[in-house]
Image 1 (cartoon, rainbow, N blue to C red):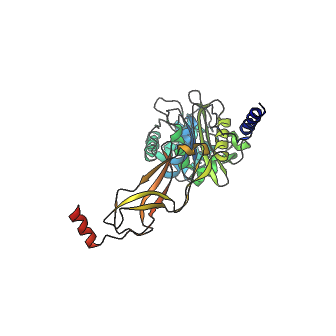
Image 2: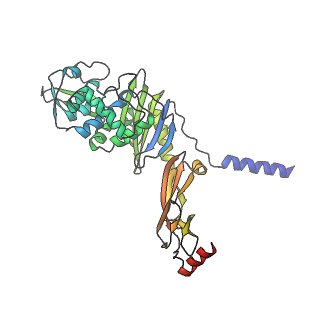
Length: 371
């Protein structure tokens, strides 16, 4: 009896003191994704290919198209269409006023001004409709095949939609523009007009995370409409790593993004999956003194993942069939690709581990005769 109790207590002690398994974050959003800015690797996804309304996250694409096709110093004359916009956040543009493209972008990205996006579109695209075609063309170039735009600001339209995955890819692209980076992490600013010269509008960023919501936050954009719900694309940087979190139709968009960032920075870790010189596979050799050669890893390969997912990591060896002799030691003879949930997370070159010379002529002749 005493021994049974001792064994039971030992098992209980091991159970209570073992490290806790970090579960993926609990997210209230209908769709969400967490992506690494540098690599594009996805660390978390929930309904990330499901079609959804983007609300003002639309303005990320509006800004990208404007930055790539316009000049920040251009003076824009406000047209009647932009001046007529009155729904949601606006900076009250008036027909005939003059304002630079940079100031309009500032208003669009910081205070989510809906009228500024129309003025941007008419100036950069020549017309609102042509600018929307430019937005859809850029979406196609980026591979955003779940996205379609019908306007520049995110108003509800049955032909205006995207996905969490597409928004993360788009945001990753947008963060490559220095001016976009600057504006989406600006807390407060003043929008100034060229004409009338005395006009100025103070604006405050709608992203609450920038105001002490989470350490390392450096963007990006909020979006809200009755149909889209509360949406947020956020970015954060710690120890040189920058992550993007996107949540759509969320009950608590800020908490959802914080939970995703906590998972990405604290749970996702670099894991060594293969060492330099480690034999990964064997590749057949034709016409050589040996029928095969060992394929070894060129270097150490680390991949970032949740350590609990290590058992789910798949290895795919790409060699392209037999290699013809002679094979030099150190010659590249393939690649080893590592995938998680079907997504590539790393690859390493495979090199010949030994020298394999050609067969002598007598051996080749004997093989033909005996074959």
